[in-house]
Image (cartoon, rainbow, N blue to C red; front, side, top):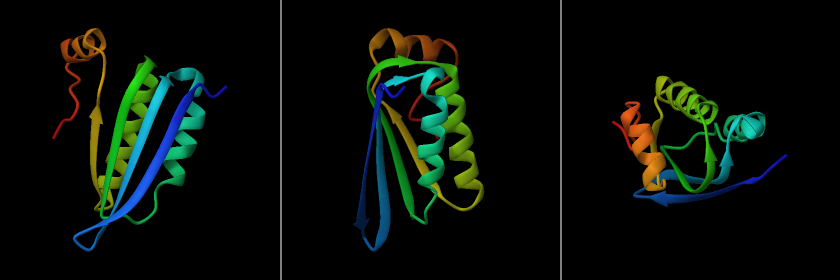
Amino acid sequence: MQDFKFTRNVSEDSGESVMKMVFEGALTLSNANEIKKILEEQKQEFSQIALMVKNVAGLDVSFLQIIESWKKSLENNGGKVKIQMDLPYDLKTLLSNAGIVYPHK
């Protein structure tokens, strides 16, 4: 069941390879295995990775756990990862009240 969209773009920025990834749609438990598989496939050697979340139809803790685990794994191996979420106000407020803010440093 894939009711989310994934796109990626690889570019060179000042001699460094940069991968930009975008997730849209239902980022929930029902798609967690597919999302995890996609992220694992993206573990190539890039100087920087930017993950963007937008046009969200649904978001739950499973997605947040997957991207945080993936981010930590890449950073532990020397990678630079930036996560940014363009969320509706109510969802952004809910996450903020739970202490989850994107982008975070």
